[in-house]
Amino acid sequence: MATLRLSALRKTYPNGFTALHGADLEIADGELIVVVGPSGCGKSTLLRMLAGLESISDGELVIDDRRVNDLEPAQRDIAMVFQNYALYPHMSVADNMAYALKNRGIPKAERRRKVEETARLIGLEDLLDRRPKQLSGGQRQRVAMGRAIVREPRVFLFDEPLSNLDAKLRVQMRLEIRRLQKRLGVTAVYVTHDQVEAMTLADRLVVMNGGRIEQVGTPMHLYERP
Ligand code: ADP
Ligand code: ADP
Image (tube, rainbow, N blue to C red; front, side, top):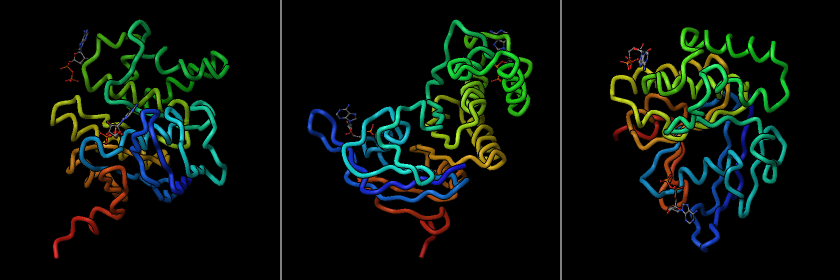
């Protein structure tokens, strides 16, 4: 669990293009924030800056009262789930999940215990010996989730995680993501261009346009008709 504070967060790419014009936002402990807006409005840029995959040009990013602007991704206690899953094709499901733990020097017995516990939590226990190519799209997305959960991060970041799945699976996975996020109590920022997904998932919605945050509010509040 963690609180996030974005103050006048700005991103100007090396080519001089400003993709984020000073974003201000406070995210509460355990909150699920969904970021929506048209293609090119800066959603991924914002998410990648939170993850530490993109440098911050100006402003401040604070996680639990600690300024993290200059911390490496691995030091931020943040796990990101991508649209293309980004699984290692030559590794089993179990090894994919254990990889980040291994890098952190967590001993083998403990890695095994954490991987098995996470696999039970999200229904992967029978697939631990499979390779990614032996899995359906939904199962791969589940592994990507498992790999994020097993690290016990303080913050989850989701970059359109369901957009490669068919409609039925999208509905199922989105309910599951919300259930897991609430159960684990992890603060989450979720980017999508799917309005229905946004409305059903979000505690609060952040609406972006042209590199700016235009509106912030609950789905009820933002979509209420006068
Ligand atoms: P979204 O995720 O909302 O589609 P992005 O954050 O990917 O938007 O992109 C926001 C804007 O920044 C777009 O106009 C995009 O072309 C631009 N952009 C993204 N990455 C770079 C980069 N590395 N260099 C220059 N401009 C970029
Ligand atoms: P889902 O219905 O979950 O989207 P699929 O229809 O792709 O999955 O596959 C149905 C079942 O077959 C799944 O439970 C999956 O475990 C299994 N399966 C899929 N691909 C393979 C494979 N290459 N080898 C063995 N089993 C597979």
